[in-house]
Length: 351
Ligand SMILES: Cc1cc2nc3c(=O)[nH]c(=O)nc-3n(C[C@H](O)[C@H](O)[C@H](O)COP(=O)(O)O)c2cc1C
Image 1: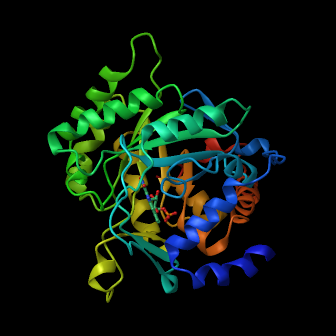
Image 2: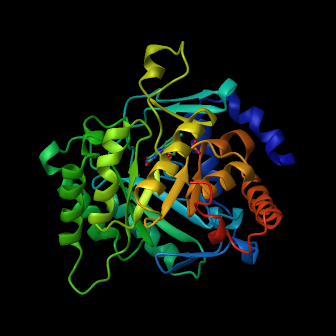
């Protein structure tokens, strides 16, 4: 943890987690333009024909409306996934809806997609995109809570049309535990309906961005097996594994126990899923590993299990933003130690 965060953290932790988060984001949104740290060449890779200066990403949910893009780049991220963005603005679930479980280095949230809505977020990205940036940007998309189940694919289609030209890739979120019915789309038929709606919404003549799906860590093995081949047949760009889990440490209050758990306790489960997906798809589908990454060795484990890129959220709350530079340095050391010349050479080596 860097010195500044050591001072700031106790103050932030005195506030309820959502207020602390809002203040942090407001501060980051005021970030001055600053020099972007150069990335060691070992960390650069090409995925979907796009160059990533480094494989470390900010997971969805931290910057739902894309308010602090400049700051994420200056902190050293190679990619940022904003969202989940919904078509129309919505407030999310009633508060309180976010809890720290400090003993476990974990968070629980039941936010339920508070979002400024597609138009406001798209305009913000358009303003940011005018500047040169090496940061890769993903937009994570999801339906409005009020949308009936049979219209959910239309919500994804609308979002994909608005963001197709603005994002380097899109992430279809079908795994939030906080939007009733959403996880039911994690089936071959459910995913097909969404992906077909998205494809037909992207204007003819435009090269569609890669479309990834974000899965829950709570899928049982048979469902995952059934999805494996299907993910390839659907010609998806890849998978983000995983979202938060419904499996909690015991003895949480009923309100808290409804949310999704992130952070250290999620790591083993999410990593197992990355490994399974890598095997099921024969390494042909790029994977983004996310869940409980709090240091270079965690990130490296994910890469060795099959992740081409990684993302994190909860560890930033516990360790502060200096963590990103620390992971970058540590990853280079680990690659060199094991004789890899680039991150790509290590992907899937332990799958
Ligand atoms: C407060 C909070 C809000 C989140 N919101 C979203 C979201 O809107 N969309 C999404 O796909 N994932 C969301 N996530 C899940 C994260 O993107 C990530 O998958 C999960 O937290 C595991 O990573 P971590 O252990 O590094 O936090 C959220 C997580 C947290 C803690």
